[in-house]
Length: 150
Image 1 (cartoon, rainbow, N blue to C red):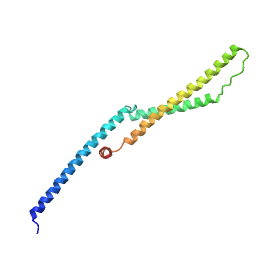
Image 2: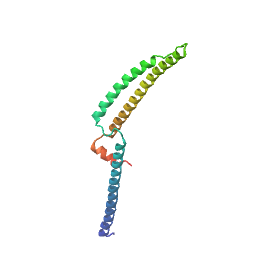
Image 3: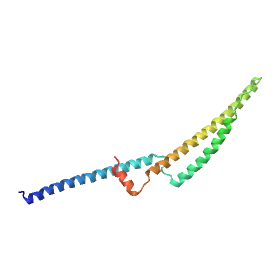
Image 4: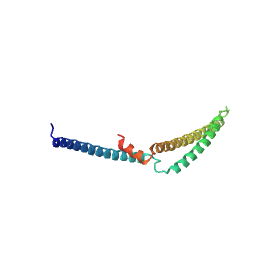
């Protein structure tokens, strides 16, 4: 027959081990939470549009969409106007024709460059909005993600 007091002492050892494991788990969770919080803050600081309010970003995106639409129509119009160099008999007339073609081609390139810049800015704004949508959640979801993400 076993001694009842001895059995109680064995249970105390298991309880002590359980408390040590629990303390280690809490410590590791706190370290991981802090590490993820600092990483989120650094990532947010690295994003160029992170300082804007959500409503301001939505308004900015709408304005850029309007500008992209207008520039796209203008680009299509300029692109459809094909520039043809005409033959000229005199050297001075040929230089004038060259300048005319160069100016028209330059306009085409300028409109295309403006369109490309507006599209890039719109893409950047939409990426920031998408990043913000993925970061949202309830307070509990946020804390659990910070706590459990390795």
